[in-house]
Every structure is written in C-alpha cells, then in structure tokens.
Image 1 (cartoon, one colour):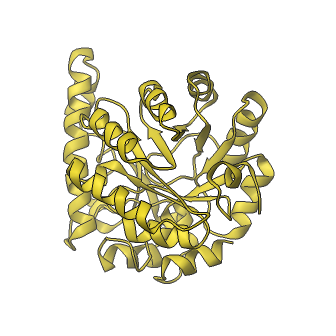
Image 2: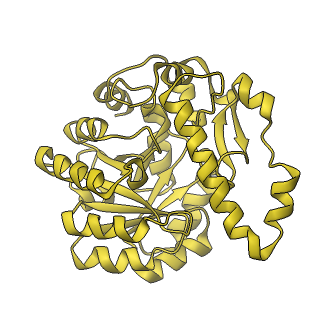
Length: 314
C-alpha cells in the first residue's frame, strides 16, 4: 500500500516499528527493514555515544533496498545527553529522527542540514502547528490508545483535526494491533501508523520472557495509567505489584510538583528513578514487575518472530 509515508521513507508498508525504551534493538529493526517497514530505536537505549554510533553503523551496513531506520530523541531537559546524541545521529546518518517531550527546533535544524527527516510526537493541534512551523516533515499523533506516554484524544478525533489543519503528513500512534486497526487509522486520514506494543512479545525483543509472556496473558482491560514511573502518566500492565504500589503520585511528589523552582528537578529525579525501575523489570524477572505496554496487546496471542508479527499486521 503506497502512502505519503511509504514515499517519504521508501518502504513497502506504511508502518513504523515504534521506539520502545529498553525493548527496541538492532535485531528488531533489521527484521523490520527486511519485511518492508521502518524501524526506530530510542537513543536512550544506549548508555554511551559509542554504543549508539556502533548501532547506526550496523544498521546502515545491513539496510536493504527499500528499508528505513531512525532513532527517537527525547528533546527536553530530562535527557541531558540530547545534544550529543543528535550530533552522533547527524554525523553517522539515519533516515529519520522522531522527537518526543520537548522543543524539536534544534533537532530539525541540524537534521535537515544533513538530509535527515524529522517526525515529531504530538498529542494536540496546538503543538502540531508549532512543530509544523519549525519545519517538521510529519507529526506522529499520539492518541489515547497508545502505550507508554499516551495522549488524551481518540484516534479519529485527533487524526481528523490534524488532517484538516496541517499541511504536513499525520502518522498515527496508538491502538494498532491488527490490519483492521491500520485500515481504520488510514481511513481517518493518517498516512501511516507507528506500532509498538505488539512487538514486545517478539523473539528478537531484548526483554525477559516473563515480560513477553505478560503481553500474551494480559489484554486491553489490564492496562492502567500510572504516575509512579516517569513523572508523566504512563500506561503499564496491571500486575499484582502495580496494584500493590498504586498508580498515583505520592503526596510529597504532588507537593514538590507545585513548587515552580523545584518542579523541573523533581521531574528529572522521578524520571531517572522510574527508568531504572522499569529497566530492572524489563531485563530481570523480579516480583517488582512494572511492564510498560498499551491496550493493543489484546491482539498478542503468542511470542513470534518480528517478521511474523509484521505479516499478521499487513
């Protein structure tokens, strides 16, 4: 199926394998490219710039004709590595950068100088118009069915609003677990979809078998919103541990968040603590299981190779 997204990235199917913290890796993106879709990895999945550089070189060396890969860059103050990561991406080269949680102005300017496209995560029209004015090549419309840090607007309303008010393409993120879901998003006016949660339960994903199996065993009704991970509401599987600790911020966190001088630092500390906890749960099976996922795991029935998950989607 040819759309503006397949044209932008020279891919066969209008699908981006979404960047997932701790989950996404080079092996998954290689399989994505070989199956005719694009793949994306969070730059924060790499502890050092050298590791990030090595990953880019490996993907470039194995990139097939009609393949595309990119990296997700957190562009707000919670990521002190952002500028250095951007420099590495621009030096080594990739097909696109997907920005999240901040002002993408610097990223767009630097990336465009070296021919890298920039797509920006947005959750509403106001920010979408802002990134369009900055020169973004497309927006990734994060709706209220997305996993992780999701939006508050339904896919149909969000895509339709953006389609009617923007001159750049709209890629939909959230609520896609099967081909019918993709067809639905395209019918609303999206040029493609960003799909994450269905790929957690893939053979190639670098997380525990317990995390993968949880995506098989649990469904859409088991996804809850928590404020206890990154300081920003995030969707997780409602495991016994999540039920035990609750999903609301503590009273002291709420108090500190109201202090204008301390708010930024509280968010950075909460983000750091939350990411470390999530990493432990993803990489090592413990009773403290905080597994990030979206409601589209409803369609995940078994752990499969990436290529088979893509075959089911298309």
